[in-house]
Length: 253
Image (cartoon, rainbow, N blue to C red; front, side):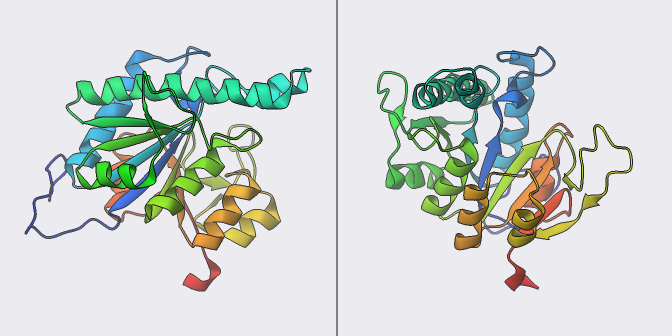
């Protein structure tokens, strides 16, 4: 199978993973504008995801809302934390609808499922229905986090990955993996090729929050942290190429 060529039943199967959850931050959609959604960025991301779907991968997406609203920041300035978090959940729905629009313009059937019921614009989250959509080759975008305040969208991504039986969580970032310190600020930062869940917790590396990492450890779901903005990276990961940083169980040694 060559780049851009769809996988066909009966052809040699080089896919290393078959059902994955892609965790996108809201900031990934805003490009360089500093706020909101950049349509060009959304379109480029959708084209990348479309390649993955045509390669026969079942893909679910969990999207954040930080490009529109940050609940923790608002609560630190005096807003009720639960209210601020619910507003953040609504921001993720806006992002999910924008991404759905871009994906469908690329010919990829997409369903948005929300943890908060907003039936005029999206389906409610129903686990068995989500799995059925994936089996039919549709992208499923999970919006509104877990539906509960005080939980991050990273935790939501891990929870949904466990529920749908995903092989892998892809954590999209602006850098090519996990470093011992911020590579944007420190030229001598060292990238980790592999880490265990316990190492992430012990070193307090800011990959995901501790709740999300603990859930991954419990369900033994590997995480690959990679650079979203290098074209072709999502497909490279699912075809087994070693990019970014892999977080795994220490039992996998």
